[in-house]
Amino acid sequence: MKSSKRSSSLVATAIAAALLMTACGGGGEEAAEEGGTAEGGGTFSMYIGEPQNPLVPGNTTESEGDQVVNSLWTGLIGYSNDGEVEYTGVAESIESEDNTTWTITLKDGWTFHDGTPVDAESFVNAWNYTAYSPNAQGGSGYLSRIAGYEELQAPVDEATGEPTGQPAATEMSGLAVVDDTTFTVTLSSPFAQWPAVVGYNPFYPLPQAFFDDPEGFGSRPIGNGPFQAEEEFVPGEGITLTRYEDYAGENKAQAEAVEYRVYAEVGTAYTDTQDGNLDIVDVIPPDAIATAEEEFGDRFIRTQSSQITYLGFPTYDARYADPRVRQAISMAVDREAISEAIFEGTRTPADSFIAPVVEGYREGICEYCTFDPEAANDLLDEAGFDRSRPIELWFNAGAGHEAWMEAVGNQLRENLDVEYVLQGNLDFSEYLPLGESRGFTGPYRYGWSFDYPSADSYLTPLFTTAAQPPAGSNYSFYTNPEVEQLLVQGDQASSAEDAIAAYQEAEDILIQDMPMAPMFFTEIQSVHSENVENVTLDLFQRVRVEDVTVVG
Image (cartoon, rainbow, N blue to C red; front, side, top):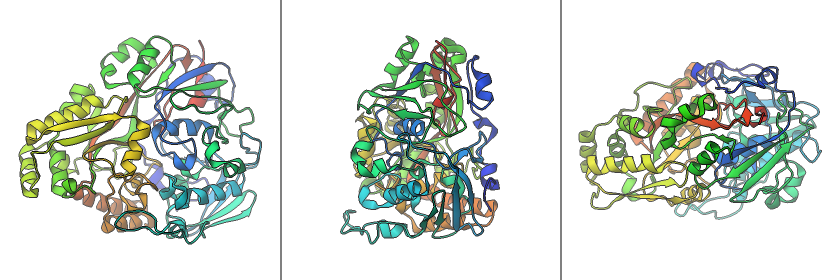
């Protein structure tokens, strides 16, 4: 159904027109419209939080590291503004006659920043490393559709979740190098959307230098993208990347360098941008939304996004193991009131596990996302929930989440007669590891944007066993074989309509189980200084740093 330079209808119609990127500023747009090949000069700076892990693509599945990794790497494919697969990356073609065995042909001329070639082996070796469970790569689960993935997973004690031995193999049987520019991928079952999936970080190539020193590589990575690292990443400070002059892609970097600065508080970064000491803040704090547009004018950017904000539940905790408890907490929160009071109406109450920007969204499908305190109390009583103990609400520090999480707590107190404790002292780089180790002791904040433009990207990475940490992003540690069976059925469907029907059946079960409560569909608000122009965000909420021009 999907082959070389053709997108399936599932992906082609995935993104609503509202997701078109919003550009700002004036000068320099002509160069960008002509393909972004003209090279300028200057250095600009951008806010990021502390990345969770060293900068290795297979272990970078969170937003802060993702922004930097995607300045350093280019994958097999890219995406158009409306979500279609584009062959703007390393792949010349990705073809299959049966949606099971895929032949990937690479373009000539691509090199890593150390001058070594980007070849078939650099992809195959990288994918095997990421999939091999002893390497504990966070993106491992994204490779689980490849035949032989299971043999790279160590046996695990069901009671403790700890490995009890070594994997049976070190290489997936579904990967084979044909020649320098060709390799084949055999999936364990048909999956028509495969070309759309391989644009994500865990599918990026790695040079031999990585395998020579995996630990050191993450501090000064060697990628194949428009920017290169000529210095090490300093935790708590950041890194400056310089333009890679031999970049083989279509969109060469316009600026000479981008300085990523780590801030513990996004509010501090916003103040620095107001003062002209920082150039870009991709997501401004909620308390700045009301005044940012008036203050920044056309340097204030609003971008409709694919992101859903969730209130996740630790299903492994006995207190939250009963779905009725999770349903009750969801129904006790007035999302509309929080949106208006905290986010100035820029976040829409979520009513589905699938965002409106992809085909498969059904308005109002989540019955337990409706504000109904009476029904919520009845559910808590049925479940025998202990209201004498406070509910602990978890969120990462410094990113502007405290106000809305406190509002959630106040509503739980008012509507369910249960106290709450805010647990918001952990930096982002500490917050996710706590979740990976089943450390959340109550509902937790979680944000998710799709990794590829499909309804499946909201389901498989968050609600399947293979996606449980450290292999993936299922921090609720939810499992339901019926959901997983329906997701496989959707993957194997011969038409977009059949695939969506199966994904929606899986969503119907998730609504009843409520491992995470959808809270908000998100609009992103960004600002930039007068020093830069052509600031845009892509479908994945990343700033397209290669397009930014320095004018100050």
